[in-house]
Image (cartoon, rainbow, N blue to C red):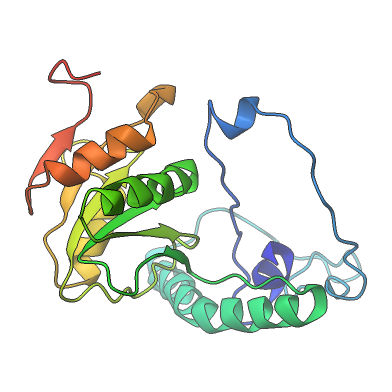
Length: 224
């Protein structure tokens, strides 16, 4: 799907597929592969280098054109949302597996939503089961897209965001992205940096101690 999206004429931007360092990068498990077949069309780039028509290429341009290039990147990011949906639908019809911007777990009646990415999003699903056993109607929402950032419907729910990242002087990038695109004040948890272990019990604890609008660094206060 990444190849199809990146090479689409309405996008023509690099696509990054990420995984958790220290966790998945040190894990061995069976991998089921699917032959691409005709799902990926032949490469056709409108600005490919053609030796029969020499041209000059440079990573730098002047102010009379530079702002236009930046707008083209933004336009491509906006158009990418529809392209991603179309590619995912084609993938689902060909291979029988359906994806989307998020993976939701027990969100139908959730009063508290745990939002995370990668392996923390999976661990949050186990935490949700434990929290519900204790009477807290929690749900988990694991993001699959990050840029372009999807619009999420979290109205009427408390939100706990777990970021395995931090932009110094700004905050957890997932929590900040949510605050910019949804009308919520999440409890922002910074956890898992550098491979720090974060279990489902820890995540359940984040939910129990949640304080909307505040930021909490796991382990900094002697609780690791």
